[in-house]
Image (cartoon, rainbow, N blue to C red; front, side):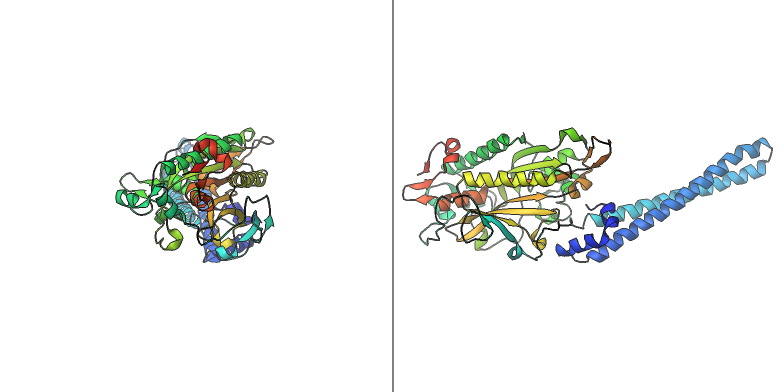
Length: 437
């Protein structure tokens, strides 16, 4: 949630940033936030004036009684009663203005950083790195082979059937489309990737968390999924709980209404959870197989940091995710998202995509974002500065490290060979073999 200070300090910049995110009615929304704040401040001033007058009159009552001026004293008491009623009215006006202001602020997205590219959609994202030649950005690392759009290569849903790794039909029988059943070596590959990603996060200094996979509405509002993505979340209506779309929600909410000592920062957490997304309206070839699921496994990394260090934290997170893709020997690229393709809550976001040789397209496997103070303001996640003991808002960051479905799809499709499906060297100790046969 944007802070009032942020808006008052540079209203024009906030509106320009919201326009970069293609948020409709930015000018009107910000003007209304400020109008409501003015309404609240006016009521506060009226209340303060009435309270001061009531205090002055109250002091005179004793003096009037002592002088035997009972009639004047009773009149003064009546005045204080009327002022009390006025003060109650001003309290109601302040509460109503503040409630309306907060409700409006919850619908306004975060302001993107200056380096975020202009653009309305994914086509406007900027490729900043790639380990595949001729795919834009800086070419980094050494790709283990040539990207090959061989028509003979099978897509992962056919490989899954050939090697009995995943049964999509059984998932439909049990739950519905988008809920696959992993079998045998397919289940073992899932577990191997989960353990590999968690082990790598542990090496990088992340503390593992095992959070609940259902959260209350306050947690959804805290990280910004509510009200923005309410229709995309599975809602348990009887208990008013939501299935998490990402571990970002419960892990970041560990620090809701918390004041952290600066010496504890940066906080680095990771978590493996199942994730649940309704993905309403998803259909077609781009969502076939593992490309888009309603339930999937993901390892999330979350950081809580100071404003001064959050940029460095973000870069470290990007390096961590990139290192995972390098160890998995996958062709990848990194994109800086345009304003129109960014999430509601992010100030800066980079996507990682891996190339699918059988599908001939790029598959997103991670979004790694800096939210600045946006989530922290919603969460009231603050820290006490060492130098002056002042309590200020933290910065929050998170990223997928990594989401499994499209990683599995790329591993199966890109590593198929006559003998079976090759397992990358870094994953072999976790999988227990060098090949799916």
